[in-house]
Image: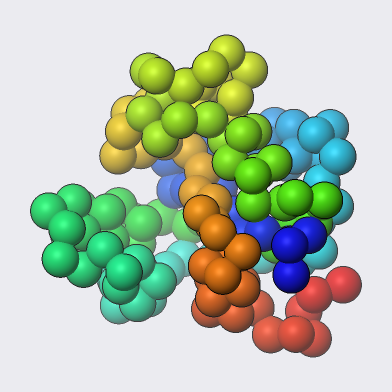
Length: 138
């Protein structure tokens, strides 16, 4: 699966009207959009998605934020997709992200940093399956 990864345009970026700009940047970076949909995660849905972080101090705030407004979930395809998407996103903290990255340009804070991306091929497969059936991948 090394050519697929999972991404989210988070509620802060959707609310601020950045979805189109972010998708344009994804396309310009050579990714193919294999699937995409807008949804409003429930608190329970966000808790399930971020279950790996359940014991972390930021879990409650993260799941509350991710269920606060609509987001856009995506399956992205490119050679070495996980690393390529993480490079385009930039550092988790927008203040420390490199110029030209999505988080530098669209993220507001460590907690509201515009985009999410899988951190490994294994997690990409899990995260894709959380939101998409095989029929939805084009």
